[in-house]
Length: 252
Length: 259
Image (cartoon, rainbow over all chains, first blue to last red; front, side):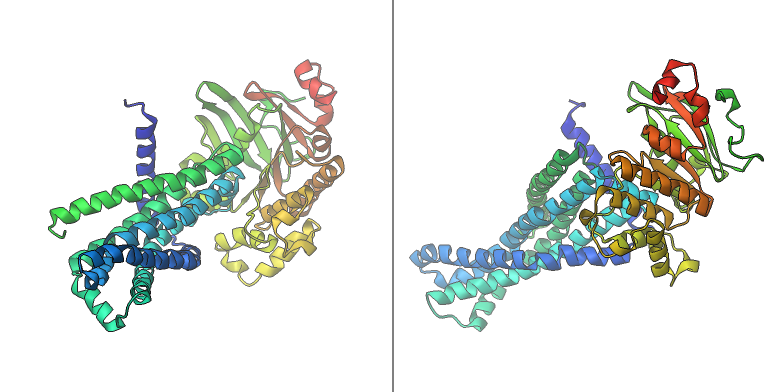
């Protein structure tokens, strides 16, 4: 059991995370590269996240409506959709989209840099490649995913408003009021905080897989692929942990 | 011909012994059961081109990566410009690397950057305050040294193999290193381009008085660039001497390279 590749990989990822905290807080700080990565990871993900958020809100509203209508509870749609999007759907869907788009691109980029010796070249140029490539990317994903999630939530709720108005009439004020009346800080804050961990997981796994890629172009493909698979799985596991913790704290 | 016991001797081409800039003492390196380097020793003098010759898989690239600090030898001592690299921390190693240039076998150009950005990268990373404001001039000079000033805004993917090698050499030269390590600089190039690169290696040596540690098995290139040749076999320095000396060597393991 102790020779398990799974355990070995888990240990290696934990060490990689440890190195991130050790090296990330020591100078020299790669501020310029960090902001560039925020631009790549955050800004360039906006269209994808926006479209996904819109469809998520619209579909959720349209599919819920008939059932809610059966119970005569159509007026509860904004509350229910708001709670669903903000607590669960927004963070999870955005996290998964983010893992697919950013996790794979980080895995492939670093993997290709590894197999073409660009990471070694960086080290030889007197640059710590871990700081320059890994720390900046992991920080960027950790900080950008929460912002993208807020954006996706907002767009999703707006899409829900559009969906409700497609088959009836509700004012924006009433819609907003309904959502806010169903939400507490215990709903919003844990959902917000868990996205930092999702972002950290996507960045860390993408960088780990890319940084240690081997075996030529096949290794790059494998790095990109497993970056998405493992970080998506980690998002679900972290989500499960988050729900257990909020439950223990009495937030559910 | 020199033997392993005469390693500290001056290069054949100079009369007075030049300063030793790189010393490898009893280097050993293994990967599992594969003992790649065993007790390898060699000196490099200022302004001298030393070629480490060996068959593919004999551990030449491992040796050069040990020198630059990308791999750590299991045993032995590497002294670069008077500093034992095993005692250096990360920052000290970075400072030392500013005085070393390394030309990768695969060139290792940053493919997401233009030629200009590739050359600016090491310049900006080394915090050379005295060179601030001269960056553009230095880039231009390095490109002119390799005869490719017109490629400054191109991406590496737009360049030919020989051009990529020259740009990689320009990137290595831009920090004006005291020692340049070349990892198979002519591998994969056509004979004419390989000869041009060999000429550039000589030109760099004469122009900047750099010492060069060259890993190669391309005998045409070796003949053109080597002041001294060390033959790597069985993980150690099997024989050493000038091109002519080794070409006349009676040992078939040495002589085979020169046939």
